[in-house]
Image (cartoon, rainbow, N blue to C red; front, side, top):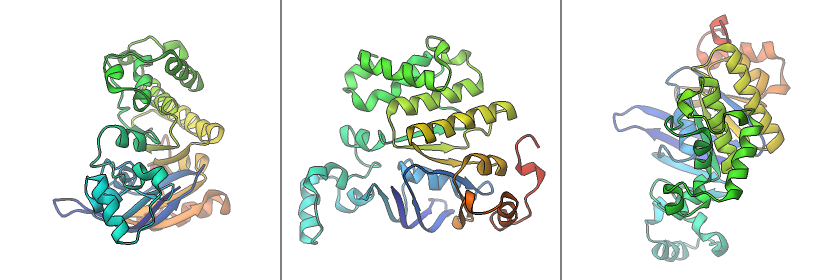
Length: 294
């Protein structure tokens, strides 16, 4: 589903965040990305939806190179001509995706790509002055004309999708409440509901429980696992806590100094053996402070 080929990222200040990343994420997986702060976890995650651009390499989504548009410029006709000159195979039925770079495109093309990928953040990234329903409906923006979404004119079918999403994360009773009145855990559930309403194929979760207490942490993780299993949404989550990765993920990927240094299916080894292995990711033995509530 998502494939990195020789991907590197160097920031303008010279910081190397990713070093020659080669990895694939498959449909339906729940991947936990572990590593110390500054290891490159967030950069890795954010290159998928092109919040951060790569310096080198390619990223494919459903076998579409999302960097291609950068290579061929911002004119589709010129892009096609150059691809023909280079003997590139062109799928005309999916041309808009084939030449898509979400960092440069605007309007319908970028909305089409990003509608496939939902994202939740440590700080929830919801609009507190809006109602819970209005926040969830922002997940439907890509399916509507811009002027309608600006005016908040969503069709009834979109509202029904939003209600269903809110029910899924057990917060339907807060539908018409102002988002600022919610607790942190409730805000994160609203963010998850927004992704459900978006009908995304992939959910990126960047430290989704870092600011939550232990009880709420497990509640939010349960909802993430629920939509992964029941809705088939591929989930890729940056986590600090090893026990959460072992409990909820199907696969653990370890990042150290911008490199993938560990990659394992969780059910392929005993938990205690994986914990021992993770010393190579963290550069030290795993301690109690790497677990929730410690």
